[in-house]
Image (cartoon, rainbow, N blue to C red):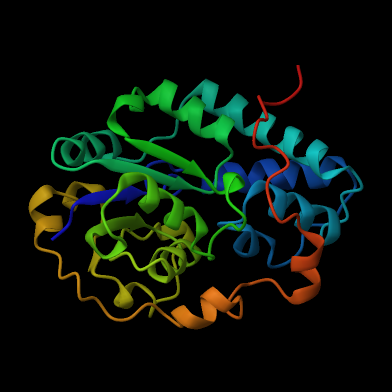
Length: 259
């Protein structure tokens, strides 16, 4: 029986993956770097220290990591202030489920971005807790952000549903032991075989109802290579890349881009 629900943000509630991608591309171009062929997919789910290090090391951006973060996040927030890109049915889905279960948010977005979204959307009161991957050691597909959300919410992982869209998000939630509801984003769809490992696959947020989640079979297929994920063998980063990334977030108390 489901006792709590954790939402992803980008790609589930916000049509924002392209905005993140464009903000990073703009910074790479402005700094004379070169966009890696696999850059878009590689950075989905990364925390800000991870994708800043990736842009520095792989895309040739010569700035310090904190400067890269400031520039990318500043561009993104400017776009959000012009109009928050909520996906169809996002507000209604959150409001429906918040009337039945405590909700969490487990996002790869920076804390300052999460706070701006909560303010602009009016959804602040709907979530019992929100976690940014910059506040844990590793971004998705590592399970850390979901572990922390589950710890704060209280119910066991197997009784906490995750709502995800991307390959790395699905893998992160499954590695943490949560039954996953997948709502694939058609423009950034996960590999065709991955949603089949979810407890439920929906075509849109209108189908994310209390009845649908109460009918979930918590005994979903085992998480993909859970032991390997916990050991670090399934992460998208090789050992040299991991060593180049900070073990914890240097921006945990970051207040936003410099004025």
